[in-house]
Length: 581
Image 1 (cartoon, rainbow, N blue to C red):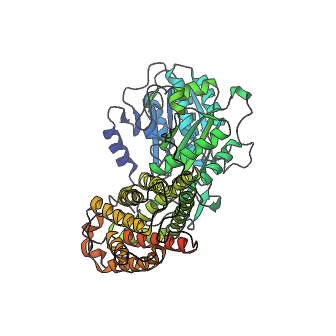
Image 2: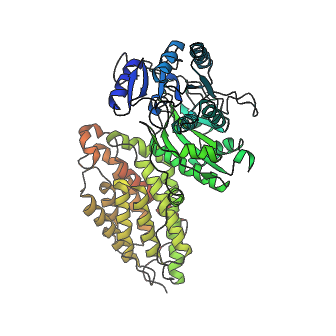
Image 3: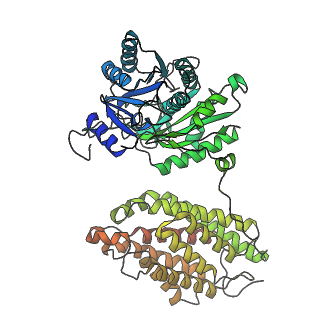
């Protein structure tokens, strides 16, 4: 379904818009995108292309150090031999023409015919066919698969070799070597949607991942459980490394180029998460990445998926891959130093916690267990919280709560294992929650746990009265930071009556009061369905939020219930009355 209306599948209109938006780099000549400054005299003219629907491939690769021209057919259709022939003549400048194309029957036929015509006219021509998709190969030994995102590596090597003034045969030889050393594998959760259609070309069952799909809307050759980013990275890396040359063979020494490519509908945030895991997998296997690229490079319209491409480098290929380039989608002036490439996240140092008494450490362990129980409970309700948040927000509340509580539990575990007191454990959990969850809820929960911890102390176990004081401080911190009051349809509508139960029964055992207060908070959270949101992002939706409980209030009830049940399962979980030594 097209946002801009009917007729949006015109490749001619797309190319016109593209060249006007990048007029400092490219121009249109004979229907092809060409370098604005033209091919340098005597240099090989590198021409590549294929069907439309794959931007940035190939128009986005036209520029200094890469392609001299890109020719495009209609969506998923090869350009004609006549188009290719005209493009080659438009950019040939005395050095001959190199035609690069993907291994599809239409492309082979039309580029091959254009090459025949050019040779008949006395123009020197070489061809490089790109067949990097390992899923569609008939055997491991035969490079006869489809051409996909690995085309970026091949076109970059060809363009860099031509820019150095190398002859046509040498440029073709290097391009062929790059193609032979490049492998790719793609995965997706949804097929692409052709312009004007309302349904994708293929679908994947929820929770499943299609592996080995093509860039023309072909479905995957197999499916697997979606799993985690680490699971996907492990699968893609293992598959591509299966084609790794032996060390020393053909100059390969464990260095490779890496592309994590969006197939069109995968966000950059997801790509960077995947790349982080790919990088870890390759490092574990002993490979060294050279000048990685993460982003859209060869897409399939709006397909929700990504592909991993690797090129196993020798000295020549590495130099050409790392050489300067200036195109609309790939720019590299100078290569980062080895230290810059290998720079990772450096964890901030933290002072070792003061060793607490045994009684404090026992309470700390119980607090860690309660936080862990809350993390599990929220994970089970993630989808419901997301659905509630979509009514008046952006649907990220469930994910944020899961992420925040997981970080809180990890921090609490580390602090407990280091012998910290309960106050330090809760404080560490709050800081991690705020840091990792992000958003309003992360800030509020982080502030609440920090305030609660301030009442617990680090020397002796807290009394029931001190625990209640901590809850009061936590509520006040949320109100002060968020600015909400009861009736605004926020978490305050659940935490206010929750704390009031404790304040109304100051002498009751804490653990018993917690059970009653939790029931009150849960009921109050559900009652927010009758309210109109007046704070936060939901306030802009006005009465549309009536009938739906507030996600923050509901998640507070879930956390409170999990903590109460965790403490109930451990009779010694909370102090009763006087402090113990």
